[in-house]
Amino acid sequence: MITGEVADFEEALLGCIDSDEIVSLASALIDAGGENPGGTEGDVANVLAARCRDLGFRVEVVDVAPGRPNVIVSVGGSTDPGVLFVGHSDVVPAGGGWSTDPFRATTRDGRLYGRGACDMKGGLAAVVIAMAAIERAAGELTAPVSLACLVDEEDTGLGIRAFVQSGTTAGGPAPRYSHCIVAEPTDLVTITACRGAANLEIVVTGRSAHAGRPSNGRSAIKAAAKIVGLVEESAHEMRQNPHPVLGPATWNVGTIVGGTGTSMVADRCVLTVDRRLLPGEDAHEIARELSLSIDGAGITGDGVEVSVGVSMEMPGFLTSENSDTAAAAVAAVTDAVGYRGTDVWTASCDGGFVARDLGTPVVVLGPGEIETQAHQPDESVSVQQLCDSARAYALLASRIVALPAVLSRTKG
Image (tube, rainbow, N blue to C red; front, side, top):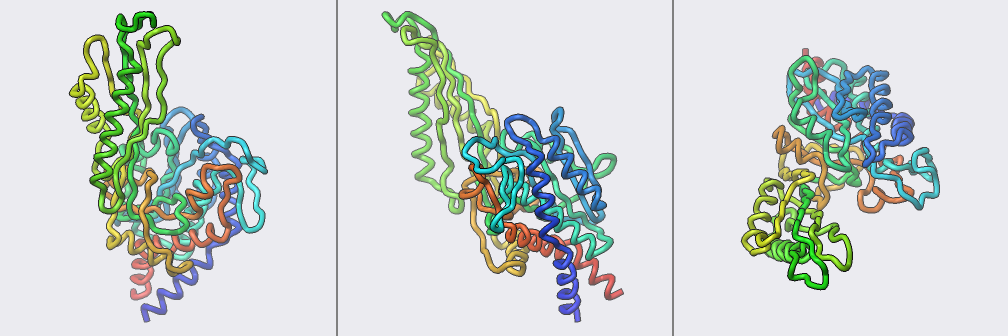
């Protein structure tokens, strides 16, 4: 009896998902822009908030910085723990090489084109339409299904840090969440772990002198070169001790800027360094350890000073493949489109903050392929996969927050 009721409910649920609605919303979000760096997410937030108000969602808009609002939308109550979807409103700069206007969404040959189509306006639209379907099919819910659409994911993470620090509901207690799904592009493979990322800035100061007698000065560039050597030694050590799931943490020296002229000893040099983080690693502790290594190697002193700071940190996460969240995601995708399995990422995302700061199990799951479609000219996503993602999201969230209530009402 219950099996038939579940099948009937889920058939009705999936019947509420309209691919045209998904494409319409994704297109409007693409057209609204949101390039970052640039801090221009406001128009995207306005489009999303307006559409969600039209759908009858609870909508909260919270400015993180001037013109840069997080948008938190929810359906259902807040009595029981619910499901949190996480996305972002910003996109990387369009750049050149496009065959179409990157901020005028177009659809051809079954694909939606535009900057952010894959990363991640398509995923946002799929979540919103899935939430609308759940509310239409299930009626009153005691647990929330929420979408946190956050600013600044592509740069320094202002939005996610504000979200985990302040909660989601003004004037009342924040909802609790037992599952989190980050709607980044994964080709509908469930990602159960990813490394984090940190940007370190290393500032080296020395003493200028005429190049005819360099011994009178203290070269910041020479000291910086020794620091690069230390970083490479650390990278080699980490390769010898990889994480069993995510592989090794990594270092990459991205930029070096120093000196003022060829005939002068450089009195300043700045390095920016990418450090990929394993779950549980802290960027500020890594910066402190690097600073101690620099001092221990004799690089500082005698007119040379070095400071190591953290300009950005995004933690990683690790969720068991056997967890309820991962199992629910895999099952929902399988029932929506067929088995897609699990994997791990070498990239990073806002989900690490949710896992670390809120203690909520996280997976990453969404339409599009991050390596072949995102962050490049003629970015696109399959319209069919947008629809498949919405179906999977609806099944996943409804099985956690809606189906128990529906069956309870049926029995009553």
